[in-house]
Image 1 (spheres, rainbow, N blue to C red):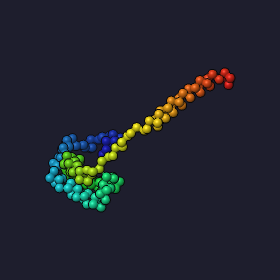
Image 2: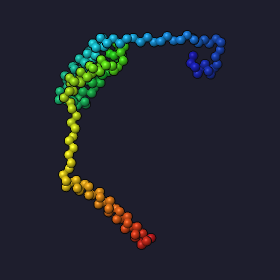
Image 3: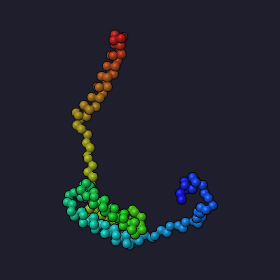
Image 4: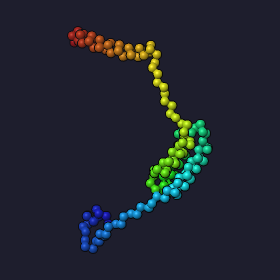
Length: 150
């Protein structure tokens, strides 16, 4: 009987509720040696999947996103099966190992920003300055002519 139902119809003497405290849930201990083996099974599956992808495309996530998703899903599922939380240090170390194996040569190419030539820079600075001066001049000119326009 739900609390709302009990409140709506009122409690009677015939209704009984247990006053015994619920026993605490026993948390099983993480089996790290089995987790190590299970995670390596996930890694072997990922390595097998990556053999079907051209190594030149290993740095392009769009080429292996589904394989990587399956790998992480596998590690998460296996962690729960052996009563370990996810992510945990053991799984993280293995994922780092996988990253070093497959993605160590993937670097983000940072663009090298250089200043434009001086002529271009001068034009880019002077155009807004002259436009601002022209707008100020136009406002002053229009305000002096307001008596003529009215």
